[in-house]
Length: 385
Figure 1 (cartoon, rainbow, N blue to C red):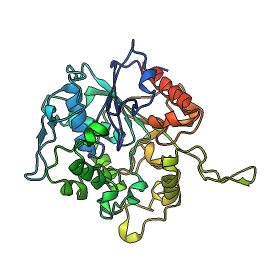
Figure 2 (cartoon, rainbow, N blue to C red):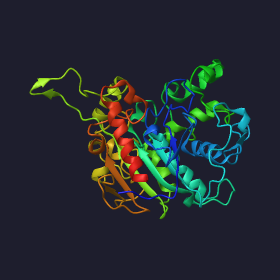
Figure 3 (cartoon, rainbow, N blue to C red):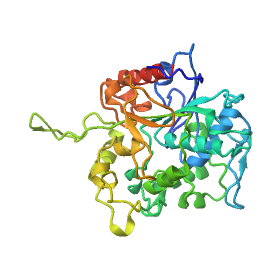
Figure 4 (cartoon, rainbow, N blue to C red):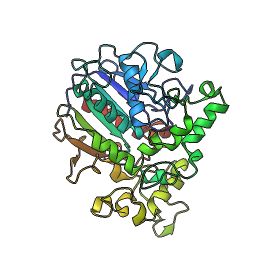
């Protein structure tokens, strides 16, 4: 089945700690993903967002790179945050807008990995609100594809010091966001040597790290609940999610295995175990008001994960409403409709389980993962054709 989309422009949006095109010489965030989209049919781009910036700020950065102009973040806070960052103040910005004629008549397809998923949804929300004052609407985006998307939050954020009840960084915030901030402050050469943090909009970086306007907060269950509640499905947009998961295996033929998640990227082994074994939240600090009131909002349902995100969180946004809004299956020839969420488990398409990093740069360091990644994106390209 093919969706026969009007759009030929596909924009890839990276996740937390990610990077843009040519930012890390010789290493694409997306591996071989973009190469699977035939150039005679698609115009594909990978863009950069603030690697630890909030969904909203990242969405503003997407808009500036796609349509052009300066980076507009809305009303600033005197002494804390600037409302506008001029285009020439930043490195790794495309010299020309990717699609200056972007409009309802020239829509785009967005592909977001990890935190990039909600970044794409935030951009559609801003377009619907005409936040950028260009007479935009939600129809500027024809399809949003979420890959390993943190759509309902990740319990991993609590390992890095986020408070379950508020989502704010309260314990050792230097583990996550303040690490990036301090590197910027003390290593000015960082943008030339590695990933540019893109935090020029912030005057008070301490307020950034300890407040709610950052990616650590947004990736908590409370943060994603807020994002889900603010977002409205557009009836003329396709919404698709590709779900990753690494099965835990303790034995093979009764023989104990040396590691619990064979085949997972070593960077994700400890975090996979943390999510699988995490104790339930205490009554005084629940991440959601409805926690433990439905099967989907019990800790047991959140244990299966891909090393960074619970599998249940990747399917479709659900923490803001009681009814199910998603259906399984869209790459097996099923009929799908605009204005509805569909999800597909990656192993059903790629022929093997993939961890959180495999749909992106992680496939390059694991035997067989490159072929699985190519198959995944070839299937996606065929659907979008």
